Image (cartoon, rainbow over all chains, first blue to last red; front, side):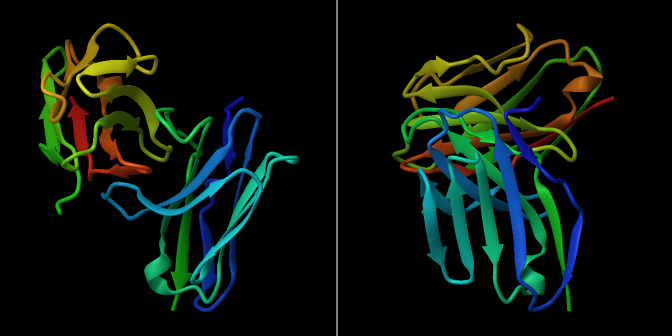
Length: 112
Length: 110
């Protein structure tokens, strides 16, 4: 079993829809949680960074962490065609040197 | 300033050959990471440098892989006796507070 599980999709929604992306994890030592966006043939780009449990909002994006359930989510409101990309969850045990452990990535398409 | 850069962007080689992949981190970032991303998968950790030393090389799959960072800036990932299974995108990241990724080198072993 992988440490981080993420539904690979693909997920296709109409423009303007609310998108929900999710990951589950097994290692309770993870404390830092990230969402990266990756366009085709590009490197991952950091979207959201959250410490421990709770919510964080940045524009149209909201990240949620529920450590008791070992479950994290990313919500995208008013989705745009430019949001079409692969979304990767990632997590680490501390803020410092630790390696990131990634999910498989969810491929998202927003249809105009 | 410039982001993380990686060269070459694409590398095609034959099975059994030796390859070197280069990473130029963001200026001033002391931490540097290498990851490998296979098709349809998330990046997998290979090795982490703090300064010139490898602080964690637990992700290197076998002794054909090694990496150096002699002056604490540019890093080179070296793969000996390449195998077809080594084909992947090799990503480099450098860190201040969060990890910033380069565009990757797409390695194809024929």
